[in-house]
Length: 353
Ligand SMILES: *Cc1c(COP(=O)(O)O)cnc(C)c1O
Image (cartoon, rainbow, N blue to C red):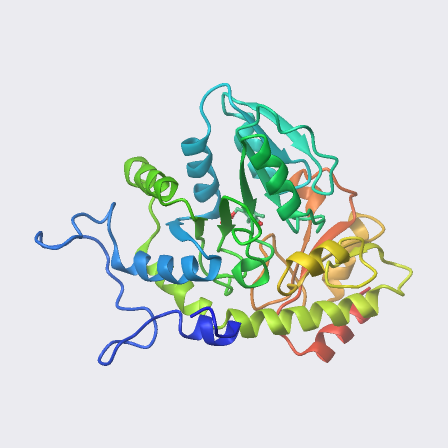
C-alpha cells in the first residue's frame, strides 16, 4: 500500500473483499466458539485487529491497540522498564507521562524537547515527544535515536500531535511509537483510544501479552469508531493545517498575541527540523494571551472556538494549559484548528481577540 498517497491509504485502510463491508465491521463484542484462533475477548478480537493492521501499516510496524493513550504508554513502560532503570522523559511534554514515571521505581531524567539532552549512557529508554504538547517544540528524532542506540538505549516517540500521516518515527530510527488516538486519529471527539507500534515483533508480543494479562483492553465499538474516523484522516488534517496556517498568518501581527507557535510556519524556531522529519503539519497552534481573564473573555466572545482539553477533532477547540498545572504562562493556550471554513474561523478568532 505504501506506493499510494495518504488519502488512498486511509480510505483503503480496510482491506474489504467482495461481499464484505467497505469500512471496518461488524463489531465483535466478546466471546467465540472454540475451534478457531480466537479464544476469549480479552486476548483476541477481530475488530481490534482490523484497526491494528491499519495503524501498523501507516506507522510502518506492528501496532497494539489500547483503550487510551495513557494505557498504551503505561503498558509500554511497564514492559520495557525494570526497577532501578533510568528513563529520559520530555520536561515539556504531556504532563501525565511525567506523573506516571514519577510513581515508578525508576530513575527519571527530564530533558526539554529542544534539548540539551543528557548523556544516554546507562539509560534504558528515551521517551521523546515531537511536536511536544503543548509547547510545539520539535527534536531531531533520527539524531537522538542514533545517539541513544550508540549508548544501548531504546527510543520511544509519542506521535500523538503529528499522527501517523504527519510523521513516521519508526522510519526515522525510533524503536517504538506511542500515540493517543483519542485526538486526530479517531478525530471526532467521541472516543478514547491509543496504540503502541514497533518493528520489534518480540517487543510487540510482550506488549500484547501485558495487555491480555493486565486486562486494560480497548472496547470493540471504540475501535470500530476510530477505524471509521481514520478513513478521513487525510482530509481532516489537510483542512486543519490550512486553518492553522491561516490563523498563524492572522495572529502573528496582532498585539494581543505573543509566543505564537506552529511548526509549519517558516519563521517558527521548529520549522527547519520539522520540515525535514515531518511529512505534513497538523492543526495545533500555541500562543499566549495577556492572562487567564483575557482567555476567558476570548472564549466568551467566540462563536466557533470551544473550551476543551482535547484536540484534533472536527471542532476548533482551545485549552488554557496552566489550569491543568502545566509549567507555562497563565495565558498560554493550545488551539486545535478544526474543519470549519477557513474564512469563518479566522474572522471569528480575530473578532474575539
Ligand atoms: C492526550 C495525550 C496523551 C494521553 O492520551 P489519552 O488517550 O487521553 O489517554 C498522551 N500523549 C499526548 C501527547 C497526548 O496529547
